[in-house]
Length: 246
DNA sequence: CCTCTATGGCGAA
DNA sequence: TCGCCCTAGAGGC
Image 1 (cartoon, chains in turn purple, brown, red):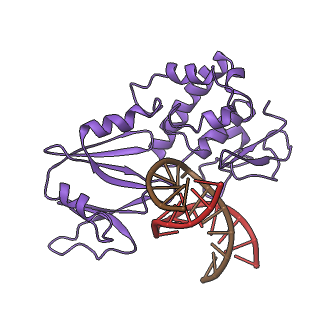
Image 2: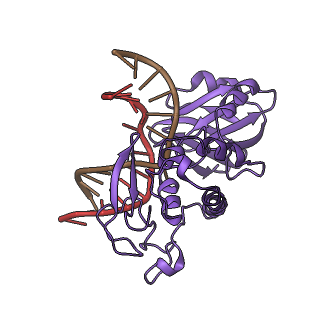
């Protein structure tokens, strides 16, 4: 694998893996790990702006010139990819990967995900469930969209303290979350609106409803018509239906 | 087409 | 607590 940093902010890191055999990619929550033969691992977190774009390597021609701020460029035999705008892009070792993962809760997309520690923390906490679900140390991988939509689907007010959430409610949310995130992974987009609430067309169709509450402040609830509310909770916008969620 | 906003998290202050 | 990252989708016109 040829690895470089056209932008210049990952030059040393790129040199640490350039020319090595790319072994595998794995993820835990929002953290991505690229393992290379010989040990070095590229740790990436996309954050708010980060994005990968892929392109086919032109046969017998040089790769296309980078467009914009390309932090990391990877070029293989057939395909190349450009990484722009990540919060984290660094080369680390196995022990450091363990340190990163040790700070994360279970990832619903992993086969080995164990919800028990997440429930242990939630059931003992007075913090709002809307904050706990966003805490990567409680559950890894949930973002603002899934947080808001999950609480709507389970009729739970985001400000309800974690210790006021019942075991049955948590179990139902976890099961639902695993299914929703698997659908999202498979489809490459977040799909959370049930067909019966689509008002005519499925939510995954272009231009159709995508969410129940996320970014719908001031609009009517798709189920009861009550105006969707929004507020800031620990620095992030929460959205909820004051009628459906208690 | 143009403008606004944010599917996060780090590090400086 | 604030600025940064500096992309790209959503929404308005």
